[in-house]
Length: 80
Image (cartoon, rainbow, N blue to C red; front, side, top):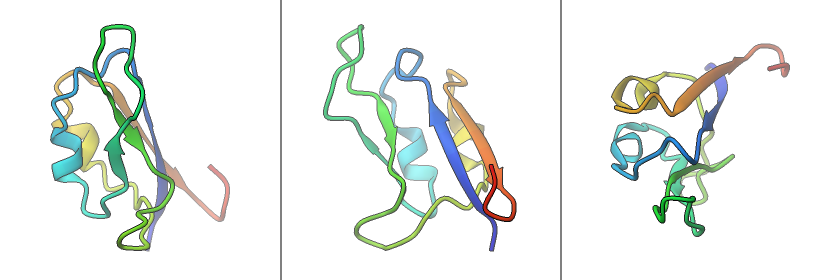
């Protein structure tokens, strides 16, 4: 199975949380800290605590993000 990692731009995120619903691994959550606009942005969690899963670089979050605030990276052989 592929492994990946995502990067979420906290300032571009408007808090619609479409990415949370689209993530099959459930590795995206809501930040405990507000961004400069007063919004709690989406936040990448290295591992889903509840499901013990990691990012698989499927790109679902990227595809649904209306603000293109997410970048997806595939990890090959342990190297990003």
